[in-house]
Amino acid sequence: MQNLDRSISVLQSQPYSKFYNLEPNDKRCLLTADIDWAPDFCIKYMLDIFRELEIPLTCFATHDSEILRSAQRQGQIEIGLHPDNTRPEPEHGLTRKIENLKKLYPGAIGLRCHRNFFGQNIAEMAVKSSISYDISTFLWNQPFISGYKDQFGINRFSYFWEDGIQLDTETELEVSKINFNTVGLKIFNIHPLLFYLNTVSDDQRRDAVRGITDLTKVEESYLSKYRKSDYGITNFTLDLIKKLKSENFQFFLCRDLLAQEKELL
Ligand SMILES: [Zn+2]
Image (tube, rainbow, N blue to C red; front, side):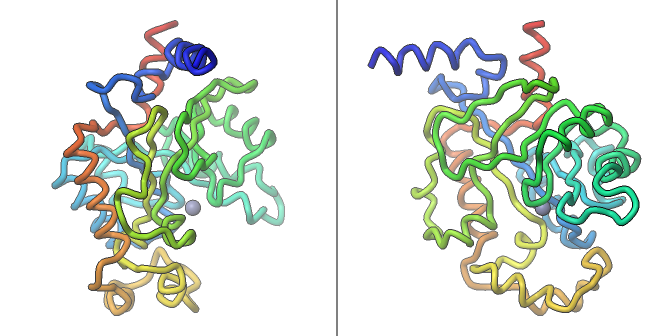
């Protein structure tokens, strides 16, 4: 147990330790959404539900969205950037991916790369765009998730649960399968398209978007045909959140993770 005691004391001394759920009376978690080019009506559907639940949401944006901007103005959400580094541009490669999104959302300080495509070259580009933190690493259902400041000065965090991975791993839609009552950061991530469709498999999502070249412009009358009414990922996400609330977890924005670090400076 000596090693465990030593590990806990190291965790306690870290700048983000208030979010590590080390104290039974101070449980904290964060909810994020990767926008992934969802049309505005999907984003609105998601934002309306979380406004009703009074849950702050950090949205990682892929494109220009007035719905996101308006929710940010109302203080409901924080906007971070979600560049697609899997598709280099013919002339500029990856060099303008973060920069162009930052022009759309100049206040953004957070990053999660689409498909978690992050590396040292991306980190250097992020620094140039004044990005303070990145959450492009995924540690499915793992305890002891902690953050650190990397060699570029970026605060690096990992997320713990995601709606799409829940479906990909075919994990039973049962809240008790998710190890949220463990020590460590608890960042949950959803996707507005999946949240709107309420699917039970990624195949169902693929069916809905097959042949679509610009998802941002799809009409609701088209996508609504693919919504599922049986118990699906949206029902599960909401049950998970209900359980977290019943266990006294408080929800925060990702930028709140950095506040404690600033207190220590
Ligand atoms: Zn993505």
